[in-house]
Amino acid sequence: MRIRPAAPGDLPALQDIERAAGAPFRDLGMPEIADDEPPALDTLERCRRAGRCWVAADGRDRPAGYLIAEPVDGALHVEQVSVHPRAARRGVGRALLAHAAGRAREEGLTALTLTTFAEVPWNAPYYARLGFRTLSEPELTPGLRRIRAEEAAHGLDRWPRVCMRVEVPHTGETIARLSE
Image 1: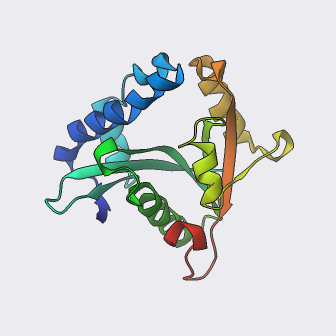
Image 2: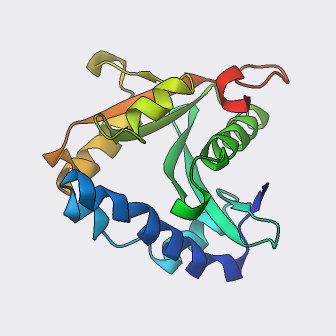
């Protein structure tokens, strides 16, 4: 698996990955999440042009997963990380997050943050195993509060959600659990 910047021709495949990665939510009684539309092509293109969209490419250089992120309050906030089910449980998501952590460090950002479903096994419990910790309400930065308000307006608060954070080392060290 090779992590690289997304290319313009990758963007429709990223939408396909998002749809496929969303399907398992149906089995958890979350059909609205399974049926949610992936990011629009213009949104993905904006992230790509900003240098904030990376893909995990397979041996044929086809995307198997992707991650989009943006700086928020001194951290690199992971907007979305999705892996196609056929590439699941192979370290693709972990590799994308480790790449994002490296980029955050290069940009002088102190952490990775994300918001996720608290009770979905491949969401908050997975990130906790990688070293992310759940933030308490007083720890939320203004940017994270804004993101959570947008999510609530989109109806995502029907299920418990949390904000999580993992510190990015200042040196060339990797985040231990992300690179294992």
